[in-house]
Amino acid sequence: MIEGGRLLIIPVILSGGAGSRLWPLSRMHHPKPFIALPDGGTLIARTYARALGLPGADHVVTITNRELLFDTSDEYETVDGGRTRNTYILEPVGRDTAPAIALGTLRIAQTEGENAVMVTMPADHLIDDGEAFARTIASAAQLAMQGGIVTLGVKPTRPETGYGYIEAENDKVIGFVEKPDAETARRYMASGRHLWNSGIFCFTAGTMIRAMERHCPDVLQAAGAALDAARTTDGDKRSLIAIDAEQFAAAPSISIDYAVMEKADNINVVPAAFDWSDIGSWEAFAALTPADDEGNRTIGETSLHQSSRCYVNGADRLVALVGVKDLFVVDTADALLVAGQDSVQEVRKIYDRLKSDGHQAAVEHRTVHRPWGTYCVLETGPGFKIKRIEVKAGGRLSLQSHRRRSEHWVVVSGHARVTNGDEVLLLENNQSTYVPAEQKHRLENPGQEPLVMIEVQCGDYLGEDDIERFDDIYGRS
Image (cartoon, rainbow, N blue to C red; front, side, top):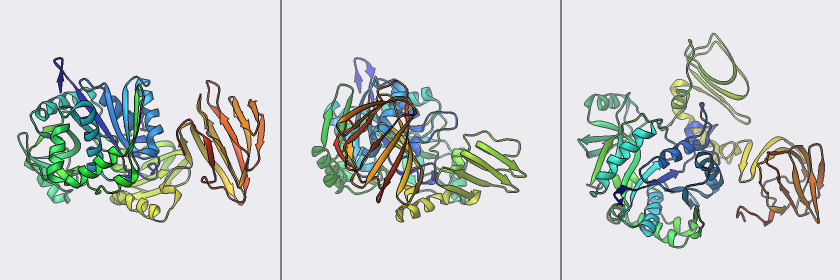
């Protein structure tokens, strides 16, 4: 959209999925976009910074799971200090990219008009050259304003079997191709007509609405009904749109590729003028770490002897390898992955099995992120659980009670304001308090430094669902 002679683009960041191929670092409640990168930062923070570098981008729309709202806003805060206007569309459940894009498109059409130019950007892609990305998107926007749905294609650098491909002639897409076998991938690379499908799309809101009306009306209808029934909270710099679960459940779970891109006849492609990776496997993630003379890539404290071409991610404790080759070893506080190089793409099957079994290691790490900070379960046993709790500056837990457990709190560092029944206590390091079962209580950090505490729970049931909230500044029920 051109306004005052200036190109205006609205970035739409899609942050969904569990990143199952990067288990055990990636979990359902701490997925791939939030994994710390070897050189610092996260994929979602870099995606947000890249979005802010687009022409006229003073408003960012993010579509994500409602459980990830606070983690997402915290990451964005590290980029721009909260200065940019953000709209968060909060899905109750993931339904793949077509319903998500339908939600974003309908919202932008309502607020900005059908001529608004949108760019949908997955939150888990790595693109280092933000200026080249912005130039490529500006070229795509010109085609989008002429009525095209534009995809960004990446020139293959290897016969990759883990990506989908685009067959193109000049800027016209001839067809989309599923992930090929090795021989077909080599043929695609040699043809000069095939590009990797980046999953980044540019279009006007009106163009996408008309394409969905024609090719996937059930997706558009369900997304529209869910948006109409959503709970919307508009603030000065932040709008929250909590999508209605019952209406959204009617949306088919389908990707935008299947729903629109493979059916529409107005699909254009712009070659990406930048390096791109979706960090879709441990091989891709390992490549972010320089190799030593033996081809080993390591993170954390390691000791390797007569071992070569191995990747070790052992940030929490010493990991030693002796006499092995071509292994991927990822060690976290509660799960260890050991995979051969030829099988590393199969990691998602372990994740799927754990998820099916209801195993906690598929859901979250031992260190769990909350809006107010983090907690880490140090030890648990019959009738007790020990946690390390860290509350960020200004953080405030809900006023709550537990029916079946008591809690002992000891301040390790920082200052704590504790509501314990009718008392309000100010505690410093090496001071403590006891909260009996069923007593209302609240923990706050009134200081400017993190508050670190040790919590000892005692009781016959210690599950996280034994909680009744009476007041919560983060809007959790």
